[in-house]
Image 1: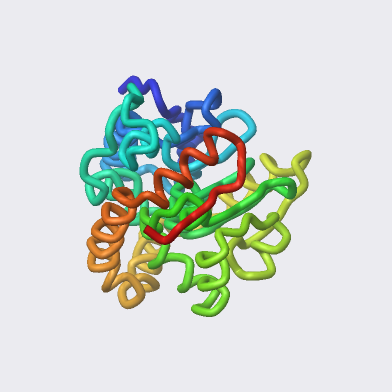
Image 2: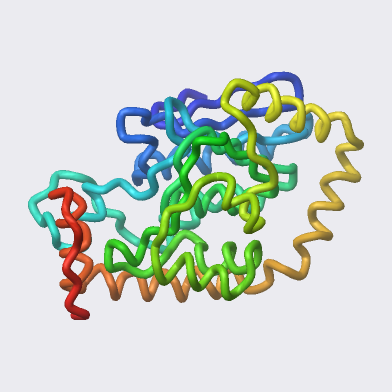
Length: 265
């Protein structure tokens, strides 16, 4: 199957899915969201796949939701020709289908992972980050509620208090701090990054595949019971904040490269 917005490659039992919009730092769009679940179904149907590596082409993992799309949906730039996000819940589900794969998944965070881009990385089983990567849940900086499973995944990895700090401030952190918080498994120098990711993937691929799949299923049996509830709740709240003046101001300020002036309305 041919893809335009992602790349799919294979080395033995290891499949790599790469977001492929480097000119936008791999911003996530509805068109990309159409391709991701098709690729994941292709992977799911192949019993010889042992592990999936998710990464980005170019210098970024993913900058999150496409800015033009967000500007249009918040009303900051109603004349934008970017496609509308449509149903937020449907948009989330297309990318987060990666969380339901039976094989182990590794997010190879090869550069900045921001907003929804970071959320998709958190939906993977393991995360390896390049040392100069920046990570951030920047939703409140734009005046909008987090989406894409943010409030489900982050507290489970770093704890409630630390998640609150990251969500409330929208602060961007470096890979080293992300590792200390438990957000990523390992931080690796750029020169060694590809080799370390490949080595981990090969180690997993060499283990007994049926046992690995069952272990993954057992691990998540309890901790993901409320993901659908949280996605519904996030979709509701994100759509509510899209309609606020603060969201228009947040996105406009980013487009104009200035600090936002939020008024709580």
